Figure 1 (cartoon, one colour):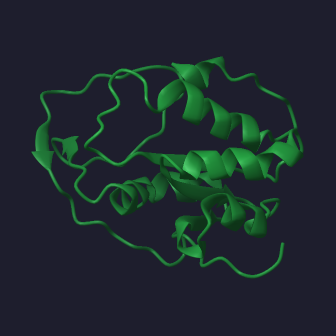
Figure 2: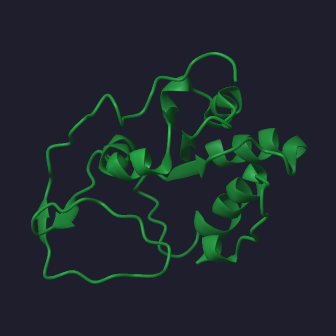
Length: 161
């Protein structure tokens, strides 16, 4: 997968490269259905500090073929930067910590893709795995009710940062 090939820059944030990779290597490739809108979920815990001058161009090019939803986690996020990447405040979600993202992942997916159907047998808590695929017993399609918790949910973007 293209995301797996992105280099890791310890303590640095290269949002432009992530957007470019989504545009060049993921969207428009085989398996990309022309009749389904493209949505990109950008998740960051910082502000861009690599290829900063390319960020505007890369986000504008990606917005031409996909809707971008930006998720900022923690206090080091630059809210104005995320607004500029998505081009609208309503597409920016802010969380205090990564566990809040995990708790609200279904809400985020539902917001991005309202017709998405979650496959589960008992609607277990959503977990995020970066170690590889997992298997589950014969899932049954269901659309769960999506809880909202003010203490762990996304916050409304504020000016500044």
